[in-house]
Amino acid sequence: MKHRPIGVTIIAILLWIESVLEIVGGILIIVGAFALGHAVSGSGHTTTGTVLDSVGIVVAVIPIIIGILTFIFAVGLWQLRAWAFWLTVIVEIINVIRNVIQLIQPSHGSTGLIIANMVIPVLILLYFVVDANVRKAFIGQ
Image (cartoon, rainbow, N blue to C red; front, side, top):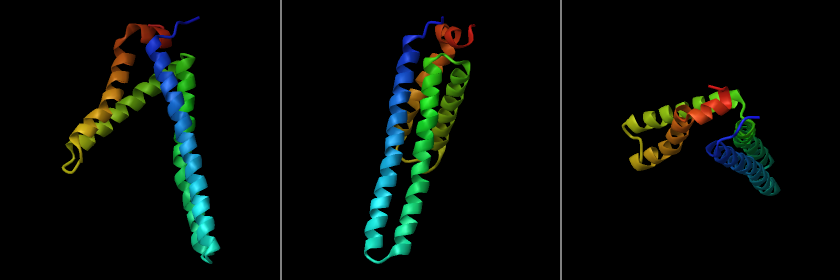
């Protein structure tokens, strides 16, 4: 039986919490959109109410899918699956690249916020790639 490094445990738990928040957020978007659509329909604007219901479902699907995928990643990390290791590395590389692109854009907004958004992906990436215990736990090297 493999030993799970404490950092991997912490990351898996944080991902699980994130997945729950994403799913709950998606459900709240659906509930809010339906409530708004019902209120608008009650005022005699049934077409607008139906459109609001439909838009709410479409918008809510994104965080729900992200939440489900994040939950799958968390379970994979918890169980020390090699695919979870590689997917986490790929996702963190994409996060770093996305933030670097935002940073070099002429109207990128707050430089401090962009750099702050890069800290966690960089730390996770370094931890997964540099720490031999993490690599050994996932891929046996």
